[in-house]
Every structure is written in C-alpha cells, then in structure tokens.
Length: 110
Length: 120
Image (cartoon, rainbow over all chains, first blue to last red):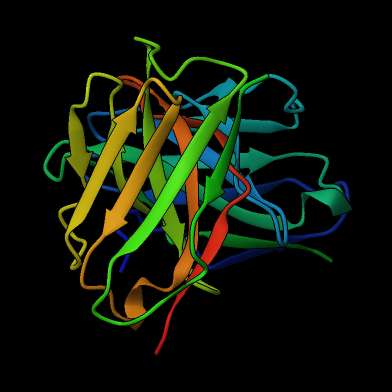
C-alpha cells in the first residue's frame, strides 16, 4: 500500500486532456513539494515536473502540475501516443524522513 | 552530462547480502546541492525509495524496509554503494541509483537500473 494514492489507470484519445491525481497527507504533500515522474515501457523513470509545477528542461508545456492542500495533480493536454507510460507522484514525508511515492498510474492512449 | 551506472550481482541467495555499486560520471559526487539515492521497483510494481546519502556520509533510510540497509559513499572513486542484508524474495527488484536535489528531493538523473533476483 503506497503512502500517496493515485488511480491505477487513466486513458484518453489523441488530442484530449487527461488529469492524474495524487492524494497524500499533512506530513508529505501538505508540507512539501510534489514531483512527477514518467516511466516509458522498459525504461528507467524520468523527472517530468518538479516543485509542484516546474518543467524539467526538455519537457513539453503540454504537461503541467499543480498542488492544493494535501493533493496534487498532473495534467496532460493534447494527448499523444508517445505519452503512453506509467506516471508516479512523489514527495518527502516529514514523519517517515523518506521520499514516498504514489502507486503509479498507467496512462493508455486509445 | 551527469550519468549513473549500477553494477553488481544479478542473483543473490536468500538470507545473504545484496551489494550494488553506483558509478557517477560527468560530475562530482561531492556536490553540496545534491545527495545520492537508491530506489527499487519489484517486477510489475511501483517505485520504492530505499535510502540516500550525502557526500559527507550522512544517510537516511526508508524505515518501512524489512531488510537492514547500509548505504556508503567513496568520494575518491565517485561511487556510492548499497548493501541489503538478510534478503528475501521480496527484495527481488530493479534497483536504480540516482541523484536527488537537497531539500526539494526531486530525483534526476536516474541510472538505467539493474535487476537483482533473490533465489536459491
């Protein structure tokens, strides 16, 4: 059971906008910034969004992050087939003194 | 650009010690702005933070891990290492080494990962 909660799956058609949620608590998302990672099939995860809403260099502006209270979300607009991947949210947890991850969301482009 | 590469045995017997090394190239492990982490991913499952180390040797580990963990750093070789003792099948995973930003804890870049199987 992951400390951060994400939906296990999400889907959309090309061109659509998809949102992936990430729910936590006051000890993690509520008091620290959220980072998002993209893991394409068979590859290592890559940083996508850091500090809630900052794009890593090279990441298209179609990806955006936001945070409110103890929840965060990743939005992907203008969905493309190459966006099909697993997406993970993560944050530092002050109680555990460790980084905690969400369980991951598998995005399917129909 | 900064690159990380994991190395170590791909097969470990139950109750023995899993040992991996991460070699950092293209930059110094002695940076004051970053620390170095191990993250693992069991086959078909999500990511789990194992622990991290600052170049000075300060460490922090995931308290949820059942197997004892030790992370060490060798600044002369630009390497850091992971030891997981008394492993069980539950420790079978792809192990990634990576760099993390101090205080903000975003992880970038990652190594390519190495699969370690615990089996007799």
